Image (tube, rainbow, N blue to C red; front, side):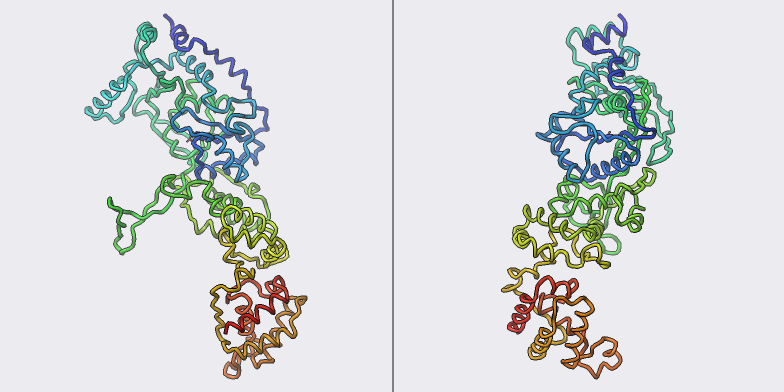
Length: 571
Ligand code: GLU
């Protein structure tokens, strides 16, 4: 019996690999074009790290006119959830991640290199597994669970440094072909294993696009390539798929890094050119150490002891990309933040290129963190988000806040239902012509609090504490407001507006300018700033607000008058 015959016995219907090599020819792309892929399991859950990966991939394919593929890795059937593929596509689309090729819905795909879902590629894996058997780089293995457990025990008892199915321990590696064929014919269960040529102690040098040159031990394991259920393992499918899809760059989290020697050996054995590997460090989170009972452990200074760990799907709501949508953090902010995580010089670039598209940034894999992942920092994200929202037009802030409120905040929605007024409210200190832009809003969930005083429903009858600071007596306040209303004109520009406040200050015996007051503090009860504070507090109930002149213009004269009167009533 020949190897060929054994291979035929195992995979009687498999095609010759030349069929697939011809079916999926080289891509016709410009020199240097990056072809890469996002290859999740269809669990429906999308991790924030996966979004970072897709942003990085998008940056690379935009720089090089390449292609981004969505491939679904569903060979572990246990992890599958209903509509998991659609969930991934939708989550990514929420952040403007568009795949050039691959799955476009739960069941459909687009592109010439499919199928893009691994369970539908079974015959392809069979062809390549068959080929490996023919060239003596794979074999059927009949080891039972018990046998494997036994092997492990023996290796442990002998203090082997490497535990597993390899070398002299790989019992079925040298099983004569005839015997193997007999077992198969007799219906014995088997898997197909790769026959590794690596030997313990050998090392390879490998160049990772992120980590640089690294020396690693070679692979020695005869790993399973086709499982008992006929489906491939991740490792084998990775080699076959990324070869046939002509992936140039495999960008993935560094938890896969130790598998590189195995993957390189698989690629070599199959006669494939290996892709460039890019292993980025997963994002970390700072956590507090606890003992077994959950009590916080203190360090020598009596502070809670901290440590860094990966962001976890189980413990951290912010691990899921869906979290950001609910929290009202705009997609633009999340993308912007993740780019700072990916390349720390992005922030500097952004300072000098405020109006450019995120993807115009010269992102580079080499600038990604090599060893330890960046710390996920919610405060930083909030700051980034404030800067991002500051660049939005009033209409965009309105539309996005409204969309969020319609789902998550009824009160805010009812405020924003008055579109015309709300766009003006949100336009205060906002717009291309404004130099010092308003930077208070980081999330849509904060909008309600920041603008509520502008809405009569949210202002009258609420428990507002009017803290007038210096000027507290009703008589003076009344006089200030009266004098002011005599001369106030909503058509005034900012400096005219302030001049009028100065006039009022003078009229009621306060210093027109802070400067004058400073020269002779004892001579004045206060200055123009105290007058504007009185007006601000009366109109808004707050001592800290955006530009008061603009606030008054948006409120309109009638509302201003009514509020001043109301404020006096409250005294
Ligand atoms: N299915 C693998 C995962 O979800 C893909 C890893 C890779 O990109 O190769 O981790």
